[in-house]
Image (cartoon, rainbow, N blue to C red):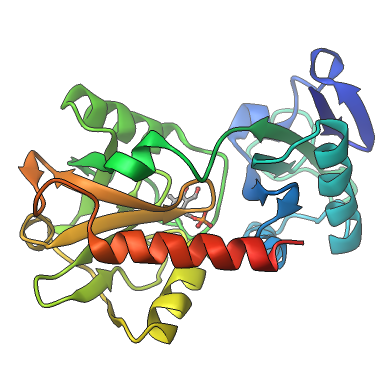
Length: 283
Ligand code: PLP
């Protein structure tokens, strides 16, 4: 695989990052994951806008502009013959003597990108749905910033797996925040889609924004508000969204089977509409 590291395209075995990189020592970095369908980028502009927001919130510099960023994504797609999968992008505050204080302004940020080839459309998880379990949300207070400090959600995911689930739905103050790497939705028995409103408590999903727009365009009823674990277990259906999984049906919540245990009609419909639009708009 060819990866991109600070201006160079190199085989992954030859890629080098300093041991003093603040991404490595402090998780002082942000990332984006953009999906690739038919060799094209899905919602690239949305990911660049969120990258800018994450960088601004941390007072971090952007290493290259949007046009260059797009050119790097495209070059990696070509060099790795990527048809379907993801491109991971990471910006860190760069390498400096280990100190909690940020290094001087002239420290160059690090930029790393790599591809991951993976089926996104035809997957067992989307056919059968996934199981989630409730786990305490032990993450920090700025989940709206897409940082690489992902140990807490890793721990939450492992706790859910230990209970036999595929992922955690993290819970804070008796309300669901989100999945470990996705936004969480329930569909009430009266057919309303409920997902938590945007705040510092959750990541502002790019897929979430697109799915909520498509739901509204399809005359589906949507409420953006926190929901409780009890409401979730009583839901007609449920699903999660993320760039790497689009709309993924959830069929079991904390040991309770939803409906007939198969992906629900609204989740299936939104997945279809989302994928059709993603294909049509990909660049
Ligand atoms: N929530 C969290 C915590 C995430 O890590 C992610 C994606 O990785 C999402 C939500 C979904 O965001 P997006 O749709 O932009 O991929």
